[in-house]
Image (tube, rainbow, N blue to C red; front, side, top):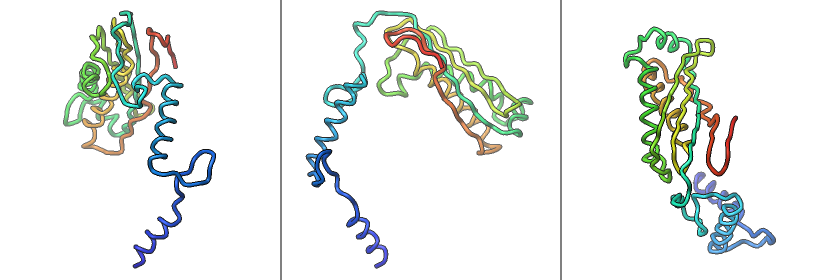
Length: 201
């Protein structure tokens, strides 16, 4: 009885969706129309290229774009703690050489980006460099992924995917020792080329 009474009170106190200029509750159809119009206008104003004018997701058509040189660099941090830092440095983890395996995983991840991120194009990459270093001062693995291509769209997602897959690989290879591992600050450091211009953090 207590549980059903609580649920009933929650439903009674729930506030119905109202229009922007009225306190009257909106019908379900009106709510859908209002949300759709807001979303469509927002997408058009912000130029979200992966959304069409009906609000549906789409793969951007790059047929008419010029082929240009594009680069991107992304970074990720994996805080592993003092014990795992020592084990990585001495190469004493059961699964083997963490830094080398994570580096290879990052390169593979960059090449698989279009299969992992639904609306990404399959880009012919000309360079994938994944640099991984162990920072004993902060007990962390620092991953930097750099990607180049001559193409019609940028390689930001490839760089971010490379850094992320490398970080996940570090976690996988170290989790037998501890699950108190934190992957943080996966971010784009810089990109060049393309209509949007260059970016640097």
